[in-house]
Length: 226
Image 1: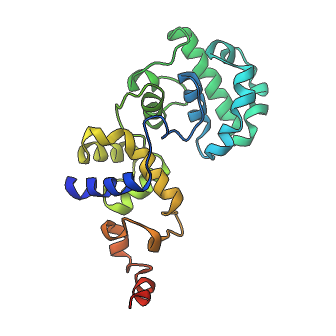
Image 2: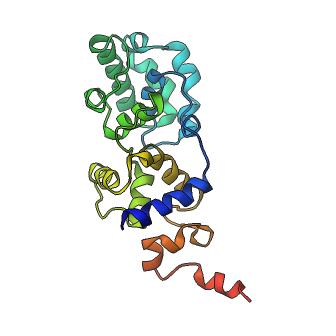
Image 3: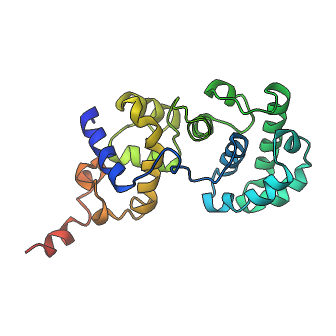
């Protein structure tokens, strides 16, 4: 897909899902530290579940120094609903220790430094730099962004880092900070993994997957036309 066609799709989605720089966060955080920890916890669970943990977690462990000294079993009890709680508890404690020991308790503002922390890959690092610091250094690619990028024809790759590079080459940097929010919003509202609501999709006529799958829903739409 060429840049003009790709940016036309984002323009439509930008109208469909209006937002500001401060309202495109799915996680409810107040500090960069909270953003980092919640993002690590959000892997393979819902934002609603993670947001429900923040009150108890951060009232007990408000900063990196406090969480670095936590007992893993205590943290596991709090974050249990998020799933994979053994690994996640270990990662957020170890990440907090790294912050306390190497960064003075502050969350770093670069992808390179963030990805040295336990449990932090490029997706998490991109979310933290973009949402916590309003620095657009890359594009966070999660399962939603991956699915829709492939369906729309933005990429032919399946590895998140390669998809990120494809998106960065396809779109001007002005779009980078919005792509994650727009694609996730559309996946949650319309483009479900198993049962996409193509008949309700505002970008279906520009979608490579829709064009190549027999135009699902098109026959019903035509039946309604006079």
